[in-house]
Image (cartoon, rainbow, N blue to C red):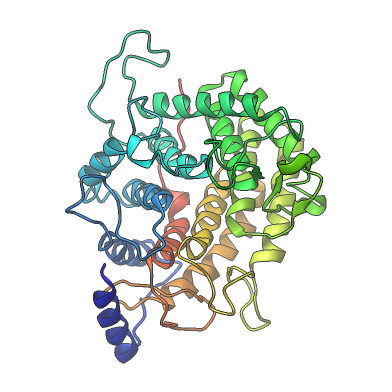
Length: 409
């Protein structure tokens, strides 16, 4: 969407001040709202591109395109609307890279661990929901089935990347992935939560899906390191990251809290709880959920139970990527409700209020959505991140009727 188109859209929205009519107790209403918002998200798709990406205002983020396609996989699974399957296949194929691990040569100048893992989530989600496979690419000595580009194989290839990088990075801080895997990239010295939580979640989802204890052991190892390093602090607060630069050895932590960081750990812990049935993982899920609730919900007394991004949202200062973070929290809270029934009622109550607020911030026919879900209408801030978050919030209400998250038989 070009800047000129965005200005026209904003003018239309300001004049109409419409919102989606969402009845959170009615599955048909939820699916209709999701279809409208998904259509708005798809409007950002650059159909002339050969790279399977979405148009986004500068600064441009490759990882967000991965998140967008993952949301459309969820949409397809929850609604049985097959509109986007062909484009999903095309986009994911174009970004797999030669090793089928979402490390395409086109992104070699700046792709980091967290960018990669947000594309890996698309393969994991497709694997769990039995999404139609890509045309099989056979390879000799393939360790995961006959197709090196099966959803499971792609996720395993990426997992193996993360293991290799963790081992290389373990000379400092006792372990942990760095944000960047290119030593020449800015941020090489930063070990951040979103990368390590992504590795944790990938291992945990593979553990539950396959039953292979190698993944269970790695998930446990990553979680324990996250706690001992201070990325997961007391009271299950999840902080942004720490540095090993100039001999710091992760001795101090950046205490910024973003919703997608705690969401990443929450979803991984939910898979570990469902896989191991160990009480400790249910305790961890409950602790993370408690902290997510107090940190990222209820910005004002008259807006209880509505999700927000506290660092940037009230002052209208969220960037394109920061505007998308709530989508991760909504998505993974919803799936946690399925995986850990003991927290389901709490989660769905919160998601219901947030989805209602998100829909109220959308325009209706055009399906474009704003940032602040607690203002009772459209706030004039549109973008890919806002659209993605609203879609994930509304879709989260459909998880109870979604296909069961599969495991290998």
